[in-house]
Length: 294
Image 1: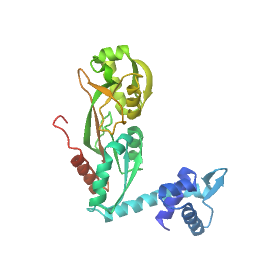
Image 2: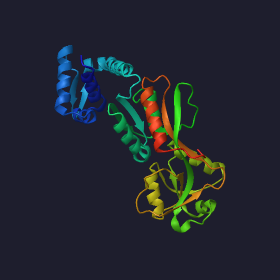
Image 3: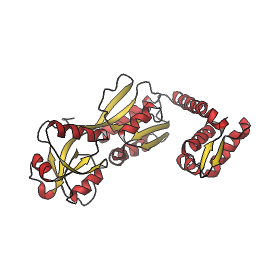
Image 4: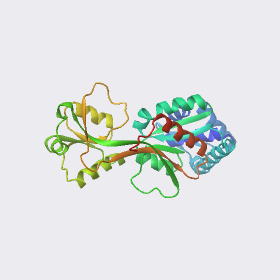
C-alpha cells in the first residue's frame, strides 16, 4: 500500500474535495481519484463518497483515518532518518505572512541553490495557529513571533529578527509627542488576538495611554496604509518590509521602556529534521545579521 496514496486519501477527507486535495498535492484531480480507487480496490470497500458538494469518508474510511495518519507519519520519519546529516527530503515549515514576504525570499533562494534536494513546503498562518500546528505535528518548524509564555524543554528557539515598536503617524505629525498623538488622533490598533498586538496593548495600558479606537487589524501593511490616509495613528513593530509603496509615514520611537517583537524559528528538540532546521537558521542569520542591540 503506497503511503502517497494514503496521503491523497487523507487530503481529500481533510478538505472535503478532490480538486482541493489535488491543488495542495500538486497533481491532477484525476490522479487523486485514481489513487483513491486503487486504495479502495486494495481494502475491498468504498472509502469516500460524495455528499452534496462535499466528499465525506464512508464508515470504513472514517475507521482507517487515524491509522492512515500514523502510517504516513511513520514513513516520513523513516525518510528523515535515512537522510540524516543531509539537507534534503520533505520539510514542512509554517511561517507568518510578514515573514513569508519579508524574511523568507532571500533564504529560500539560497536554499534552492545550495540544497536542491530539499523539498520545502511553506504553510502560512498567524503565530498562534502555527504554534498549534507545531504541537499537532502538522509542520516540522515554524517561523513566527516569539510566544509570550515559557516554551519549556520540549522546544528550541532561535531569534532571527528583532523589531522595535514605533508609533506610526502621517508625515505631517512627525514632531508630535506619542502621548499627544494618541490623545488627539483616532487609534488603529494592532490586533490584540495576535502575539505582537498583545505586546503593544500591554505597553499602552502599563503607561496609561487611553486611545480612542477606530479600527483593529492584524495586517501590518493595511495599518500602514490607513495611517498614511490620515485615518489614525498606531503602535506597531518597525518590521523589515517590504512596506506598501508610495506611503509617507512618521515613525516615532516609543518614548520610555522600549519594546521589541522577536521573530524566529521554533521547533521540537527531538525533531528528526535537525539538519534542515540548523541550515534554515544559519541561512536566515546570514541574510539578516543581528544588530548589536539585538
